[in-house]
Image 1 (cartoon, rainbow, N blue to C red):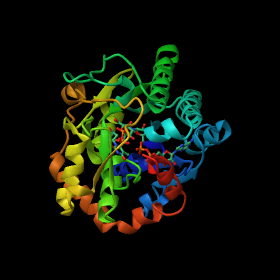
Image 2 (cartoon, protein in one colour; image 1 turned 120 degrees about the vertical axis):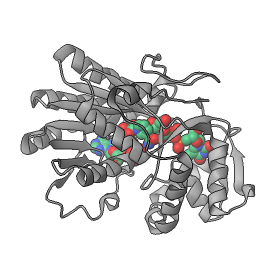
Image 3 (cartoon, rainbow, N blue to C red; image 1 turned 90 degrees about the horizontal axis):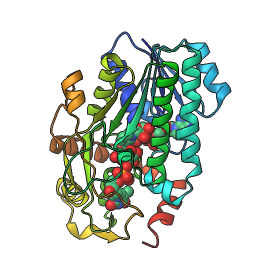
Length: 337
Ligand code: NAD
Ligand code: DAU
């Protein structure tokens, strides 16, 4: 199978690239990534000499570049991760790039995929498109689309374009919607790596609002395995929710990290809430479990422990990121909170 993976130098994309090459001898893979602030080729160290792996630096909004990669590599299947992915950036640092990459970029890829008659297009989407839940219930594939921040709205727009390509032109397209991932190589702007890094440096841990916002956490490799199953066995035109079914308040996650690191809870600082902060996400992943036989491999506790250890053992990886431009971002976002 000749796969085009977009955004393969990011967090989930790089875990997926490693997973596919390790687990499937029949896969040849092109990683197409613009290397934005979130793209890091260090995440893929060791793969450079693998003859089944090719890296192409390119932007999904650049038609000529996208066209060239499809033409040159005879792509059969697309797994589309590339996106602007951070909610806070979409709220505080300009949202146009979210529309550009997530909406225009997706449509650019869809057009190339159709022109080159690819066999399957997998859109990697998010539970955020469903908006926020009350205290009960879980999102199903038929929940209304009610995004509440620019990032989520841009992902919802992309999902609608994927749906339209299937409905109008018969493109074999499948959409996955996953809950909050954690694991190795996650950019330290996201909750878990940020809290681990701050705790290791004995810096305050900024918890938004009352810390009782609920996210449904899933280990990144469980997500990668789910996408793999969808690539191979999913039904064209279908949506699949993916989640760890471990929905807990942020404060519990932060306390868990402090326990693993043996750091005091006095490091926790409650800071001004995120605007429009969705109160609760929880996924019903019953469809992918029943129809495709996927389920998470291990427990949240074991995966969190392994993840925290990874950040302890790979301190250089995140320390390099936390210098330079990222410092400016951190000061701007948290300085007056
Ligand atoms: P990330 O920010 O870590 O990585 C994004 C990658 O996309 C980077 O390598 C970046 O260089 C690349 N990219 C950005 N703009 C590009 C462009 N214009 N052209 C080509 N490449 C570009 O993101 P992530 O957390 O790994 O998320 C990957 C995908 O999974 C996204 O589509 C996101 O919406 C989705 N998702 C993420 C989560 C999560 O918890 N992180 C959950 C559900 C779905
Ligand atoms: O739900 C899936 C989504 O999960 C993905 O689509 C997004 O790409 C991904 O970034 C993630 O979005 P969240 O906004 O849920 O993730 P984040 O790690 O930014 O925040 C998780 C929760 O922690 C959220 O309720 C906000 C809170 N938080 C976050 C940060 C960065 C804090 O309390 N303090 C912080 O400093």
